[in-house]
Image 1 (spheres, rainbow, N blue to C red):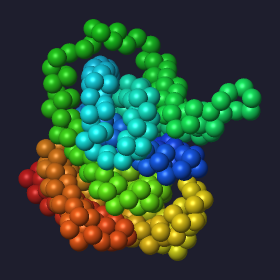
Image 2: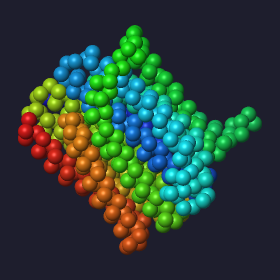
Image 3: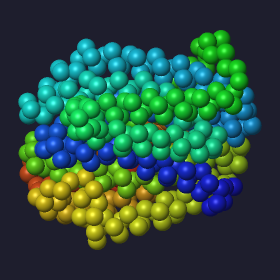
Image 4: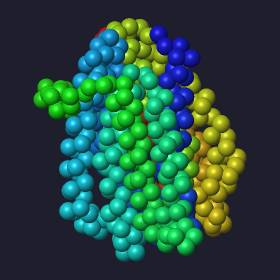
Length: 434
């Protein structure tokens, strides 16, 4: 059984890397918020569109993590390396396919979702560069899944900190320029900063693994059977993670119809949200590893009490951010914008988000526990049902009832309540049969 200290040993490096990951996501907003509402709105749409594509690679890596965690629990270390190498091949192939598809259908997709021509053009310019980051990021996810699966998370935090530090340094230089040596690229400069940062941090984690594994013999270890095993577990997770982010993308598309001011405010709120959810995501990813290892070792009696410990820690680590978000919302929003109008309009939304965080800290470990058991089809079902409920509720709040922005954001409670109840039901049902 995992103790609180053992759980924290896995989680704490992920929390550190999670904040680094959050900085990567929000750095664009941090600097682009000074360029105006069009750039801010474009970065919101582009960021969520790109994140939707990233979830395909993340889904593959999540399936890989489940397999590696269970193999680790079974004591089959050599097989974990074999699965990693096949996962790398699969990630490379997938990234190349979706990068190519984007360049064929890019403007048609954006025209379908974005009505404002200025925001659409800016989004397209941003994504034409940002999409180049899919390949290094998919590779990064493959190595990340390995180190998550075996419970060795320090290298993940180091690589992510490097990524975020480079992104933070390069963003202002590439957006605004540097003295007389370089003219800024504006919105596109932020995209280049992210791509370069991802390339270098992926190179670091690849070198780290190669240093510890002298001979990989990459091509000779690509096996059709292993690729099928990875895809069998990963395919539901690909759809699950894609749906998760795509639901937020559609939510922002709905908000864009409310007006550019509402979209700009929501983008600032999204940036704060991403920053403060880092501990929750760390506990979520760790839950997959911990539950997977317990399941692999066949010590089923420890599943429920260990999950309860994870949830208690998740809520405890989230509570300070709840307090800060509710009582000092301006502190967090001012990181990303100095526009007084956006700050005033965003304050009531921040109070809604503060309570949503507590719901989030419970629902995500519950959903990840279902995934850790290998029930990836059930995890997809949970996400799919919650997606339908969330989008229908969003459409009603925005287009039928025409509510104010804070009340529209209350839809987060609908989503997390659905995730929590369904995840608890399927987790309890599965462990009764073990």
